Length: 132
Length: 183
Image (cartoon, rainbow over all chains, first blue to last red; front, side, top):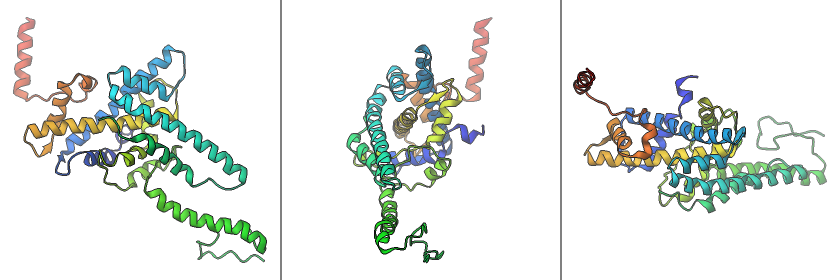
């Protein structure tokens, strides 16, 4: 796997950092690359914990609850609180989308444009603020 | 009579399904025309929330890269924040699978990791910025990240990723000391 593929895209990382930091903040290239690697390591770290839990419980599929559990267990409680809401809203949105798809298929139309906006609407209600 | 095939006028009826009778026209073609309009409107509407399609697609990486930046303020723009998925789901999934033996990963898990990673970067960067301010530096450097990692137990998992850098002289001294102690 090429290096670029095994890491998060640095453009996205840089963009996110720029948005979150004060406008006068500057980030060295090395620091940005380091954050990119750390974020990638974070993903592996959380996934590994969730995956181990699945193994212990003889399950083959890692789901959102496992990720939530891993975040709590790894001392990242405030992440767990924030993403817990997202998980709930995501599942609601997925249900809504499935229902919309079903009704669209029934009426013979193509996918309804408001699926995505429905999802965003649902997330909008639940976001209030991610715990910081 | 089929008259609808006019390649230049793409806005009219994307599919020429031969709808020509007046009655049907009002039903079906108006539907498709409306759809055109809806698509045009929807394109506009879609740009605002910029929601990532939940289902994976091969072009999602480029879509993510091309996404325009909205000025997201962490406090005022909380609503907008929640809607966006920052990273390509494909890439997140690939990283999740690379080191781990989990054969299957559900989409909601990938989504959560996406959001959690976003939070992680926000917080980690924020703390590094604080460190750079204390250091009275204009740039956030590697050393600010490494000092955050070494000073906070929560970031212990990053200790190998972001070790503190030592100058060669200092490293050599430590090595010699350890050799002396060993003897």
